[in-house]
View 1 (spheres, helix red, strand yellow):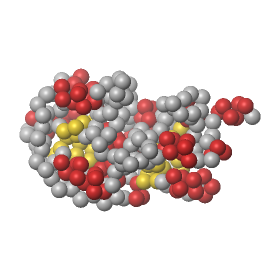
View 2 (tube, helix red, strand yellow):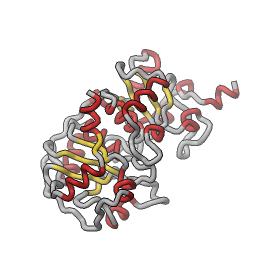
View 3 (cartoon, one colour):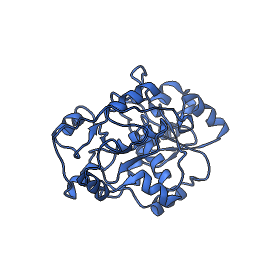
View 4 (cartoon, one colour):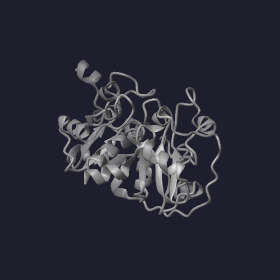
Length: 294
């Protein structure tokens, strides 16, 4: 199972480069740049215009979201997602490869990977090592815009891959599923601000910072290393698991890592700490600061 999962969820720069050179990017293979950065730091769309993988389109996570939600990157409706990816030339028969340009190697790409899976699309992969390593390895880049032909995508939300605030609240008592939080340790513990919010975590959650799943070069760690990481945290991959973070983005790294280990059913709490902080009662926000004061 694990070897099959690895082949599907990750593709290497070498594999994609060969596909690009062979002219396979088209209706059957679409490449999407899912980069996002804080606006004061970098401009993802502008960087894409200046250089990207040949044939790639820009997947704008600011556009492909529920804009009516008070929280940052909540899933859009089925119709919104279907229309958006259809305009990028993605049909239900397309193999989609997603990447981003983050300095870590991969940051937002797993969110796009999970979004496609949440809407019923299985043929989706993350470019292992991201754009950073694509460039480092000398693969081709271009500023030429791609103009994919409109495609028809039919989206069906798989609710088993998504958790709501109400389900997370109920789970604090019932403990029906394990919860892994992918934020840095300081934010999980409540000892540092989380992008302006007081931080902390959901009761019972285990901390596995998303960056720990990546090697120093920015590639995904081996399946054996990832399995050992879950074991060390006493996370049982044979039992239900939900991932959470700040806004539903880096939680998708947990889903990807578990998928590589043969567990394709990790759910993501879409609202994550952004929603939990604003809606959960005080006793449901665990912080080291409160413990220390006590």
